[in-house]
Length: 134
Image 1 (spheres, one colour):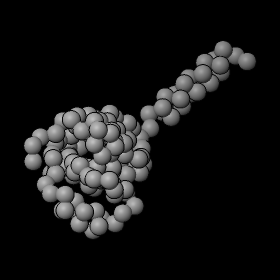
Image 2: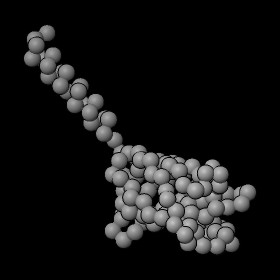
Image 3: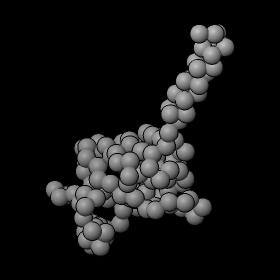
Image 4: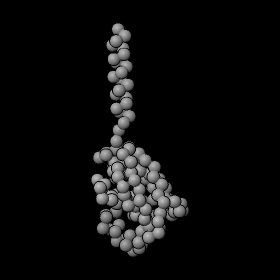
């Protein structure tokens, strides 16, 4: 096989591997996980609510022992978010609980603790949350 064909084939394979490695999650979302400082022994629910200029829906997930992780399909899109955190008692609503029921339960818990987070334009990110007083 001529060296030129070998070089062209090698370059094509290398370019294909580079393109495959640079992937995004579904719908341009970023798989976000991390910890919530100060709540290392707590469980609850949290929401990422997009701030003006961020193109993305509000998303929620539960946390346990101060650790959270969004699944790929329910992850936030890149941008700036208000983070709302409610510490719950024994039963934490998961993503399958209807939003109206979650709102009712969260209203019973009172005001959330808040923070801000910037989600990068990446497939995955670890974002540790620092809470502020409600």
